Image 1: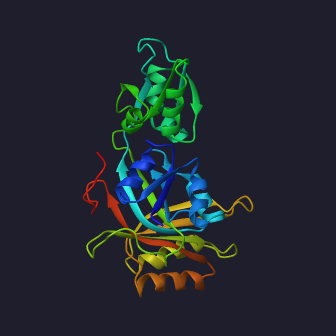
Image 2: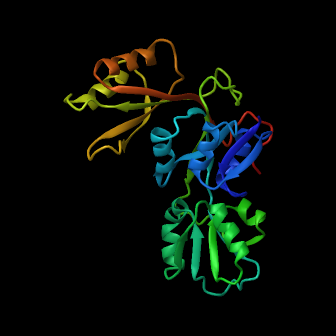
Image 3: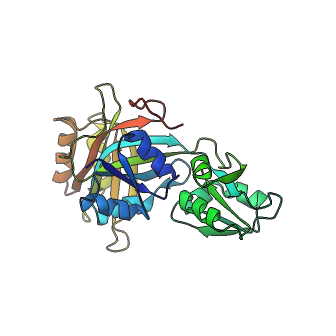
Length: 293
């Protein structure tokens, strides 16, 4: 089964990431991020690519929360891609006519907040499941004075005109995507080498009756000289004030250091789960011969 799911429809940033990671796999679009994760867990597809974090807007909470609370899948690879948003309209619309509606995903709208405020302050924002879904909607509703915020791939896919390119408020816009599989015993889909950069992602919960527990958690990594690239808290959804922590460690899972740190955390009464240990790729260093154009 060589199929990979992504947040659709065609032309989304997630499809581009899926193509970059696994160019020879059949790509299957899904209506939402949880839908694609469900399909992996139920065996309908071999893997799914989902957005995990944006450089401007931070973590994609629906991905993290669904992964933790509903579908505990294994993180198998990471792909970081530059993100460039465009304002696109239907060919049949007059480019000089005032845009009344702007359709896009909430993250994309937030990435272009200053552009919208400056150029289209009276346009009504309509949220969609993905930027590609917004582009598809605009293409199917030429009667509306509407635009979509999406990428150039979506404009091409749905035969739309680009009014403005690179409209995101910050130039360093990029998104981390993660490849999810059923478990770590699945066949490794991505090629890697000894020189490849790796991360290991942990989920840690703190004991409620231990003062200074978070400091002790960090100390378990610090004295072992293990570098953490990210630590983030999310609500446990049990009661106010209960959180779990997602920790990214800049190394592959080994046989000594990380297991030792995890054992120390468990001795403190912490809950520890390894969500994945995986190679990390960027647009410029993919090992495949085919890259996104």
